[in-house]
Image 1 (cartoon, rainbow, N blue to C red):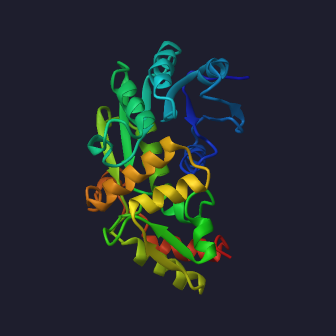
Image 2: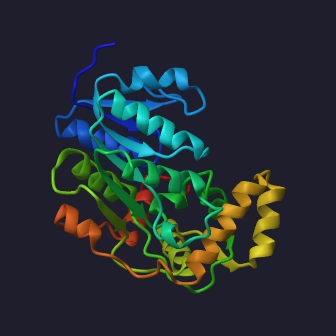
Length: 278
């Protein structure tokens, strides 16, 4: 493998933010190492033998945290020893205000980069627009005509993954962001009912949003095969959202990129035209 001393290593390179980040960086002429279990550079959190080859020659890392929080410190230490001098960690908005026993991987990733001794920044986005067309999140319920969640009428300023990727690209390649935490949102808050109605109009389909209780949601998750840990984290996430702690839009996308973030209606129109909910 040919390596360079200023490659950018993108973990989770086949994921929603990672694949767009790889595209944005390469379009701007940067050398990128796209890494995941199925990407061109193999990287597996559970197989530490894959880490050295992924890190060799990298000077910056886009860190998508592991599920196992114990691995974050180990990886960051090895990365700095290998020559990494900048981290951008993907986290979640309001992570500092959730119970300590949930989303432990993200929290460990934040702590690890902060303690790395090199440049770091953290991005904490709201829920992604693209969760609505992801088969592992909300796409299949939408196709079935019913999305049921324990969220009620609290608005969510959904953020587009292209905006997240563009912000991450800027933080990885531009100076002036060391020690900064950016909370990334879309331009306006929408209730889930309004978001589902927007998708229904864009697709011409009958789709409803149904409010259920946290207990009902937990039971549905477990019945679908989710682990107790995943169910706990997701119920906590919706508790957090329902309390309105991440309901207000931020201007951090505009601060970094100098443009407005992508609007949910534009996302829905574009994604419906591409056939995501056909």
